[in-house]
Length: 129
Image 1: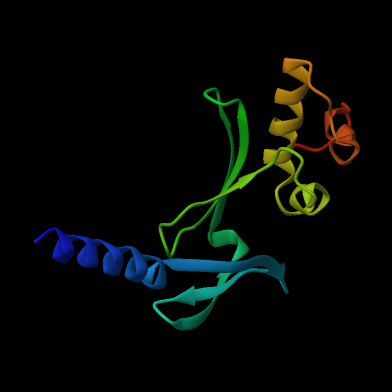
Image 2: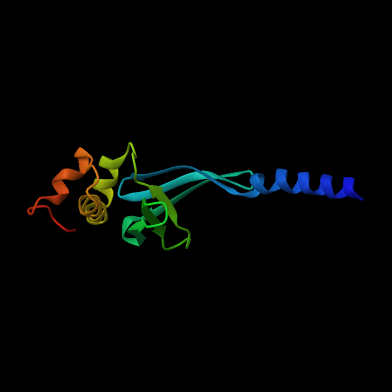
């Protein structure tokens, strides 16, 4: 009986990742947010109008994490991007300047180092789009 349970558990562990959504890339192209990946062995490519994408900066006090949540309204799913030491900060500033300004303000408020790509967002002349 124990062997049957073990085999069933191993099969479940092997199947669940294969059926899970694996997002390979998320990028902006021609004014659309594009997501590509694989789900249940099928390759997919979703395109969302930027006006239909909600973006929100979130500071998680537990663990002191800074996240940029990207939520295409069509899917109802949220992609959380960790902003700490993110090599794509400049791209994220271009994509979501108002939310990245909130990130820069939180870093300044906490006395944390501000990446050079964010420094201009703290100047009074920076727009709050």
